[in-house]
Amino acid sequence: MAYIQYLVFNGRSLPKPDSYDVGLSDVEADSGGETEAGTTQRDVVRTGVADISVSFSVSPKWVKLLTVYSKLPKIAVEYFDTETLDLKEAEMYITGFKAKLEKDTSYKGLWTVSFSLKEM
Image (cartoon, rainbow, N blue to C red; front, side, top):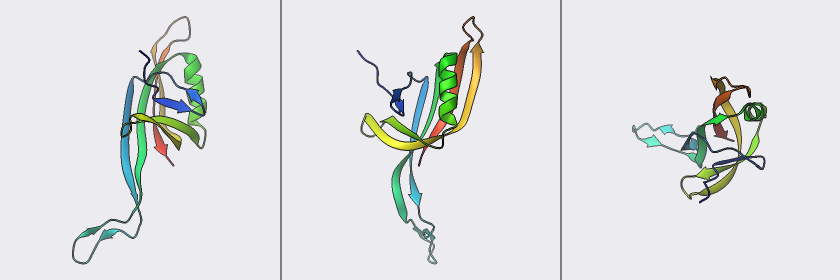
């Protein structure tokens, strides 16, 4: 049985993540807010904007590659969408990139890399 492909960056499949958390939010216009009567008015411009938190246990090769992706202004991402249970395409960027050495080995260690992807 094949495993689910959770993330693809610029056509390259990423390893299976240790954790994968998808949040969907709405983008509201500045014209929304509270009315004089005290009710809330929402002017939604976009719905279902993805925010994904992910972490991986990876080799030094993947640490280097993910670090390069973290410095790009945007990435063509295919991510596993929890609404459709299929891959969905979006332009995203990386924030909060962290790399942590878990275990030192003769192969330059085992690393935990975590970051958030924000949809543009």
